[in-house]
Image (cartoon, rainbow, N blue to C red):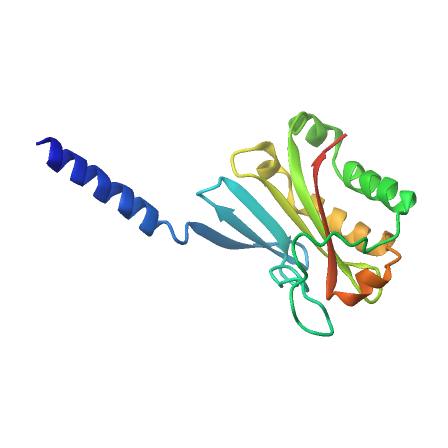
Length: 178
C-alpha cells in the first residue's frame, strides 16, 4: 500500500512538472487607439504588460555586427550617466498615478523595463511587471499608456560606443510609486 501511494505521488509530481510547460495566458487589452499585450504567468503569479506594437520586447540582445549575444558577465557602460534623465523618468512615472491610485499601490512595487534604440538613444519600448493578485491589476491601462508615451517623448540617452554596438540597450528596475 505504501508503494502504491508513493508511486501515485511520484506520478502526480511528474504530471505537474510536465504538464506546466505553458501556464501563461496572453490577452490583448484595447485602449483608445492602442493595444497592449498582457501575459499572465500562473506559475509565477506575475503579469507582463507592454504595447502590442513592440519593437524590441522578446528580441534577444545581440551585437549588430555579428548577431551574437554579448556575454552575460560583460557589464559594459552603454549610456552616459545623465542625472536629468533619471529624475525626469521617475517624475513621469510617479505623476501618471492619481492620488487615489498612489494610495492603492502604496508600499507595493512594480517592475519597469525600457528598451532604448541603440542608434537614436530614444526609448522604443516600455514593459511593466507586477503581481497578478496585487493592486497594479486595478490600475487603468491608460496610466501605463501615459507613462510610455511621455517616456518616449521626453527621455533620451547619450549612447557610448558599447551602446551603439548592440541592437538595443535595456534598463530595468523595481519602482515604488511616490
